[in-house]
Image (cartoon, rainbow, N blue to C red; front, side):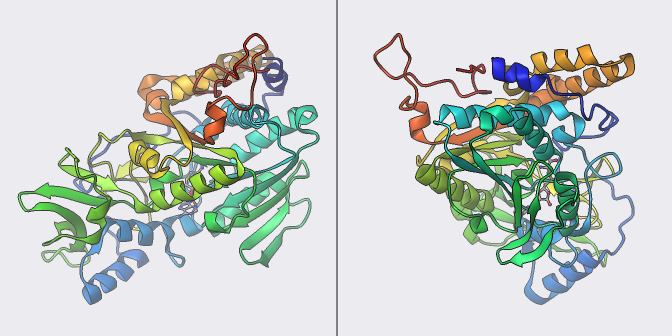
Length: 440
Ligand code: SAH
């Protein structure tokens, strides 16, 4: 526990984050049936209409991909959509405590797996870099623990706009950034605390080597295919031009089977499912890497364990938004199916969770950290800290909607790295967050 308390001694560096009544994205919402608030013809809509006219209706996955990450006009590419002025808010943007506890998770896992001489910390979809900034502050505070470890940071980000914000947050550009640093690295620099940092567009491009991976609210933006059960079997939901209204899109059902049906389980009992092949590819890549070189992955998102049906939804200006209206101006997201992620690990690594955010953060010692911050704060900051805590932990807010899931080498759970002095047999140390945090 002493290490946690030392980290907890750090300052309330960013107590004032978001003003609380922002909408977070993890709210269950049915797609495409809400009233339109005007429907401007956006450049993405024009592009999609042209595409559908030339080659026919497109899958929902293709639609999401074009809308979110089209290199010319995608929603994520040139937008800063996070925070009060943006479209949605995430846990790290609400409270510094969130990132600090995740920083402790990575150090705890690094210690439990034998304190390797070097590791890469890889984040998928780092947003504004706030989460990584909070993690790195903990790494600095625990500098004596990590002092002989060679750490590097690797960010996987498609957004030009957000990568610039990340660079500003993490490096303060004290050392000038190298842009076009040489394929596949598109930018590199050094963090405020002197750690080398590189940016990539794809996980495949990140060097293989002992790594810890982090993905917070990343899997939910990956494109999903949607399927409806019909008397003729599974039929994919497609997007077509509305024949009644020009410049308007609508959902239709494919007249016959489509290839992505292969991703549906044979014993599936739901009548509507969403499948995310891109998530499968990423989990397989992570699993192979972790099985080969050690480390681990921590994935946090809203989602379900193979039970929900229609979860695709849009967000714009902290309001739910019709997913087919003004594409490119709103975020699109679908709940993560953790049972699918577990299956895609294909037994190469062990998986833990999903556990609810409330339980994970409690196990990580959020109450200890909150108390330290409260003791150091004035009345106004105390009020804010309590509101932030409530937002993260309240089961009706983010506490039960968000889940934590981890991939770890099998040997981490089968106790080869720890021996309990009182027993002759090796005993596995509990994985922090998924069990109570225990420092040795
Ligand atoms: N993790 C951050 C941001 C979540 S928003 C937070 O919790 O605050 C999703 C992030 O994923 C953004 O940074 C977005 O630009 C990035 N992103 C979306 N699609 C991506 C893709 N296909 N590859 C890499 N990054 C992607």
